[in-house]
Length: 489
Image (cartoon, rainbow, N blue to C red; front, side):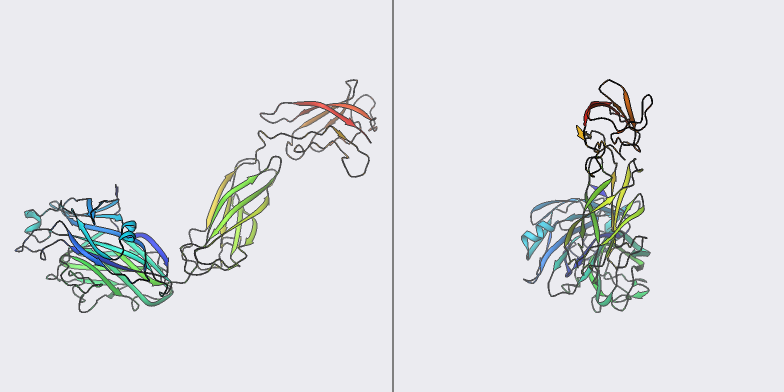
């Protein structure tokens, strides 16, 4: 079980023809208060009613209550364990908790119908809570669905557990406001009271949010459900607000401010829905192929436009770097549709002096100097890298058994494949059949059938016959190689 940060922050982002709804219910019999019944139920139910053309994409269950926590519950009699937990301490005597679980599979299997959350039992209703009206329990499921009739939207789900009284400020990041029409924000919050509204306000970017008649400007969290119109959701809220007048095109973040002079309110989840039509370019290096005695590499890679709301245009550039130095520039070549991917490969020649391990990196939407030309949903997921070393260890060189230096352009020198410009420090010794050294070669001096060594040598053309060689590669893990070679013309 993971103890999550209490700060409300981005948990998940979805892009497509998506919207969301939320269901849930309280386990309080009445709104809590110092003179009310403090009993808490262990189960309650709520109904899901999506249209037939709406498909469930994701579903997240949140449950909460007074006390140190109960992180094992049941949903429609299926055991649920919290995979993430949140907590808040109001003082030394009063703690509150929230649990989270991804219940997508369950909601997709059950579909529309009645959902019962049960076995939420370890709720503290002792004097510390009951006498101060802070005993509560409840649950909510945020359900993301796809509908082909919807515009292309970006949905952000933020969660944590931040609380008032006094004031909290929550920064919503990773927004991408292209169109304010239809923009909305939703909240899952706990312990708000209809009967308490002392200096209470909910603001977005400095503007007060309200949803009359359910959520007045001075009492936003008051036990209501915006989706069903219920006003008896004691001590919990499932609220949604239109925000088209509270944001502007080009905004990438928003500020939520909640103040309360008395009422305890804990914000657990915030959902934003914004119209958005942008691609989201990513690149993944699948494999880098290399061959023995070659400085060329082949990079196999995939371009992806997943979690996007628009095509990725054909002219989107891709830059390849070796140790942060640009070496190759190309484009994707075709328009890449939403949620599609494309396989491609390129061949790059590596500097022969680059013998140590190096890094190959690929960056999409990069024109070779770190500058992109395509606006995207996310700008920080455009690169991938691969560590590589051009090593000839365990590579076998290919030594021919004859050559004919007759000037016809074919086999005019002793061409040992994989030797020259690979084993730069090698030394080649050629002996005649009498054991006399007649030629000494290296990376710059290839044997062309003439002599450059011996008593009175004068670069004479050596006679046809069998010669013997000793090849010192002068590299670790390589031993000298010996053999014979037939010289002909």
